[in-house]
Amino acid sequence: MLRLGAAARERYRGLLVGVTGTVGKSSTISILRDLLPAQARVHTTIDNYNSRVGVPAMLASLGPDVDVCILEMAQSSLWMDRGPISLMARPHVAIVTEIGLSQTRQAVSVEQTAEYKSRIFLGLEPGGVAIVPDHIPCLLQTVQAAARTAGAVWVVGRGPQADVRVLGTEPEGHGCRVRIALRGRTHSYLFPVASEGLVRNSTLSFAALVAMGFDPEAACARMPGVRLPASVMHVQALRTEGGVQATLVDDSWNAEVMSMRNAMAFVRDYGRAGVGGNGAAPVARRIAMLGRIVNLDHAAEAMHRSLAAPLLDSGIEHVVTHGQEMRWLREEMPTSMLGPHFENAADAAGYLGAFLRDGDLLLVKGDRDRSDFGEIPELLRKL
Image 1 (tube, rainbow, N blue to C red):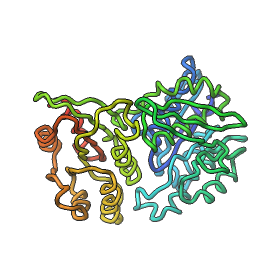
Image 2: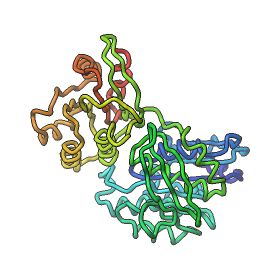
Image 3: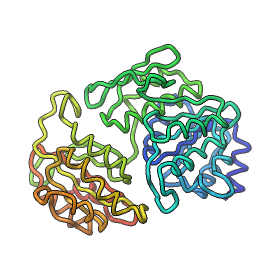
Image 4: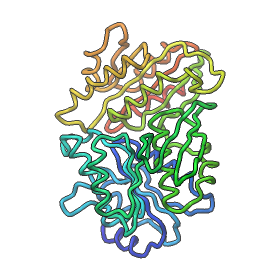
């Protein structure tokens, strides 16, 4: 597979974008894919083919007529002794979406995580562009690593020194209006979901598109129609057979501490100051169905317990949990907020179906790896 991937990359003459980060990889790829012109032939990572074997597999299926290839690169594909998989992929643009503790068996500190993520820049083509958000920890470390191989480093964010500067975000409709300054011009677009993390990913995708030479104004026009991956911050009406009408926030694709915090912040703000749609009915109750975070090794207990503070700040009134590791979080929460704990999806969905009332907002957030947690949203839709 490695030889097939390398051979396909050798014959490929289009543009290639590499994306890594603790969270936000899949959504950034989806946004960038939809910002490209409709006539562009695009090849992107499917499912979790982002490892040291998955990336070559994606390259092996890369046709020579593809205009833009966008590849997700997991941390496990970048820390290898023989060198990061980006050396084979050779991106023209490389994005780091976020830096945070994850897979702590291999990376025991944020600094080490930043080191591994920054290896994506080692494979940049001559003159390639590195794109880094300005809010991340170890920003200087990451920018310095990028500068060793990149033709240009674009820092994206709200800071005054950002190369792609976010001037502001305001709620509008079901999403938010984003204003960006780039190369002496101001651009404005409507992003369809008012999630801070997803909006940030949209700015990284916008920067990557411009770095590849595409029209920024055309991208702004396409932004309202971007499609997020399945079960990534999907907001939808939920109506049970008993006639209850609630709102489901399905964010059950996977989970890291940072994405858990982002989801809780989204629930906190939903229905306030226009978030969630103009004229939206007030939220009756905020409810969370939370599943475990995987691959945390020795840090699992501390990191699950650390979710208590953002959960208490979220306005969520009732917390239902799934998976053994979530028992640590329960020990940090007031008993008045706790619903039952479950080890299977069917029982959890059955409880929620009986508990929901008109106007409730329900967040389903957790990791589906080696678990039936990901079945809960579909079970709820069948109630």
